[in-house]
Amino acid sequence: QALDYEMAERSFAHFIGGAWDVLEPQTELFWNWHHDLICEYLTATERGEIKRLIINIAPRSTKSLLATVSFPDWVWTRRPSDRFLFGSYAETLATKHSLFRRNLIESDWYQGGWGNRFQLSGDLNKKTEFANDKTGQMKSAGIKGAITGEGGDYIIIDDPHNPRGAESDADREATLVNFDLAWSNRLNNKKTGRIILIMQRLH
Image (cartoon, rainbow, N blue to C red; front, side, top):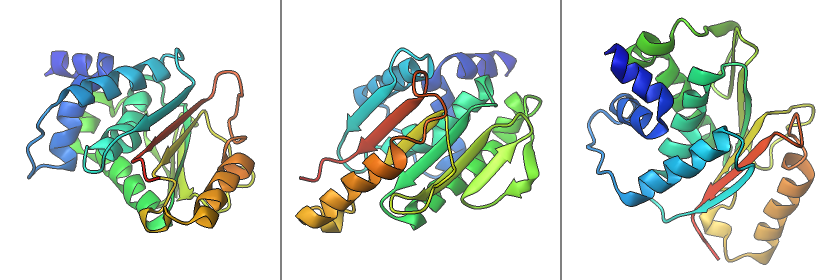
């Protein structure tokens, strides 16, 4: 078991195996080449080799569970002081992903391997925002939500466009303006910060 945890900390792809059993206990994970590719690029992002990453992929490809839920929790096994900002076209979707991340961290599996690395802060533990005792933080909001004053080492945007409005020039432009003006400048360090965008191609 100790070896399994060590391998999960070293390899994001291995980490996914344990995380999946927590997040989707009733669903079998059919591993495909695109999972390896996403893990490879996200690992390069964690290492600082890639600082701007866009992943376009079809719906129902486990993109959110890999990039938006599991990846930040994996980063905290290595650097619990890192801070994340998450955005999505709908605040409800951003909240759902935030709950998944927190549930994974609080799971027996995660605590068995990394519970001694950090503890979630009791005074900041909400559905859309939580922190740990190593100054790490994860905050989620709708892409059009207010994030003034917030910053992160990572900005992760999952599906910024509402599929129902993808054919609207005005809707798409509004999303792009929100990203340019409100999100893209939220990095704590412009040189080392990472921005990850993962979405289905809609237009």
